[in-house]
Image (cartoon, rainbow, N blue to C red; front, side):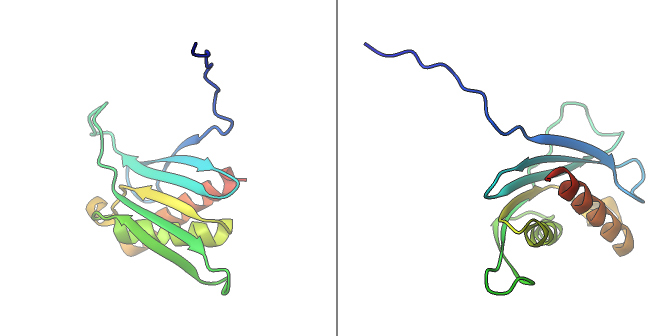
Length: 138
């Protein structure tokens, strides 16, 4: 006779964060963060007031990064899935892996070039995303 199995709720609750990107007019960043003891998973996307409600955005690039055990200033990364946002995703993954001192998986559909951001605006947005993720992962 089969035994009854009751579902167990997850012990780790992901955090869902939304905030405005600096200098990107009417653009909101959405971050889904799951910080585990051994790794972190971060998924990033954006929305603007003209987006259709309920429409799904493509996943974007997916990158795995981990701190180098030998050289603390170095980070190793590998691309798991590529799209137009690969450079931005890789940059965020490497920064988070170095600061969190653990492996991270980063999925990101935010493409600064498609938003028409200048380099300075892109860097401010990147800094804001990293700051929010680091603050919430503690």
